[in-house]
Length: 339
Ligand code: KG4
Ligand code: ZN
Image 1 (cartoon, protein in one colour):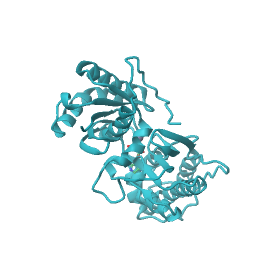
Image 2 (spheres, protein in one colour):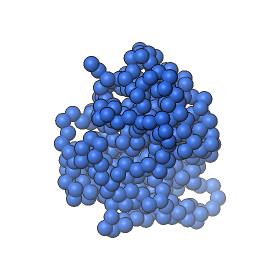
Image 3 (cartoon, helix red, strand yellow):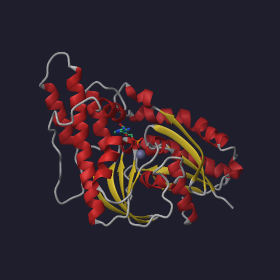
Image 4 (cartoon, rainbow, N blue to C red):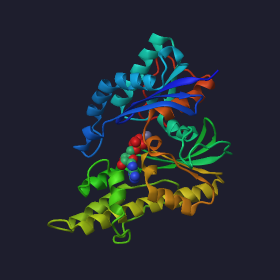
């Protein structure tokens, strides 16, 4: 008998729901993005995000069931992100999931958003490089998004070790902030990557925070240096300056991410590297990591890099099969860690 899990994700600015069969087959994956809503602020506006989730959650879940061609009675469980994330946003998904679970008599499975980003790699896709098959552990995961920059060693399903993380801004946050400084719009990652292709990555020697002896990261100094450099120029900004700054900034972020990931993979004897999260959509990052490690590097199609419900359903299926259930007192945990 196959297991069908509905995954619900509202930890940040995407209202997402998906149905996944047997933890690896995506029957539907519906996302209502709030990008246009937050673009005017150059970043996620938490209060508006919660309200947009309230409006979107019911239609998004209905669409996920419709596209999977199933009804509530065909589900085995409901998995929901309960942290980490924005409190107001998490509450919408969690309370919807509780209500549905109570109303339909389905088990409620609590999922850590970061665990979801890891399990995205076990979803079957048509794209080369995704879907792991018979992977040997341990594998090293770099989770890089608007909210996270973490190196996690996965010893087995459900068994994680924290290796390093950002001390200040997340990598994606730095992309978003620098894009705003350069008047490139939001979200910053894709537009900086595109702009950087026209620029010289060696035009500006922006600082790299190596933080020796650790696998931690820091991007706030880099961001401040970009700002300081920008303030040296007055008047209309030539296109060349924007492209060179985008390229030099991106090179600084990627070099530190790639070097530290490669060093950790080597020292911890990982059998593979998983790249997850919105920033892992960046082709230059993928190329830089691949150039530095001598084990396979697994990447995801774009819609599974960024936040989605399928990854929550996949992680939820594993937890469902492990017998994990949430009580009705399950609360959000905005600062939840993976290890
Ligand atoms: O995983 P995600 O959808 O949401 C969070 O959990 O934060 O990641 C969104 C982040 C944004 O900061 C966005 O600028 C960044 O991922 N991003 C990228 C690229 N595409 C998205 N950063 C660098 N290069 C990209 N191509
Ligand atoms: Zn995420």
